[in-house]
View 1: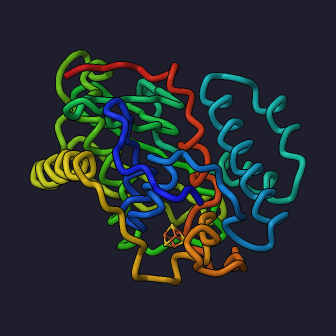
View 2: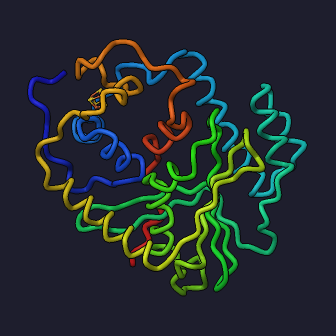
Length: 279
Ligand code: SF4
């Protein structure tokens, strides 16, 4: 670990739901990952091979769905479902009705909006819009467990994705701002296809979320001390635990609540792809 940690966030840093979630899980993790830019020195969960396999399969599944949504033939894509997990997820996906006929579909959409000198960014698996009527946000999850809806409702992803669609999504809605009541976010679980989690939105939730998100970003930008979390059980799934003297052994994948596929994909975003949508 460096003797003295950097404490100042780059003024041009782009926030995402992942970095904000890291901040709320542990402020020191935010500092190590986004201010120090430290590589991940340890695995997040055991068994390592199983964790990596699920991450890779999760990423491939996302890719297959994206390719399907842009029109590639099912027969061609089905050949990629070469493992039992992928094959099951793919069958479940093909058997599920997303109910988006007639919607304008934007798979793998990236939106961002400025917050002071920073930007806040959201990378969506799918946004489907019936202009002036309905805006559906779909997010595919390949986690082994289906989290409780209350847990997902409180996640930064749920708060950032819905608010960002209002902030930066008007161009998808014939130029008119999308109204909060038109938005619904759906987490579709590939292993629990008939149990999606649905989160509609209201104007008061939007006001609460956007005000909170801008407040968090302003507070983090001027913060100089990033303490270690007091909840040490979070350290078992954190790749920085050796830096923090919080144990050597990784937690079990079975017991982890985090999503293997989302822990790395957002972190590795290609920022050149970002649609710079000003409001
Ligand atoms: S090991 Fe624990 S204290 Fe250290 S960054 Fe990770 S979660 Fe925070």
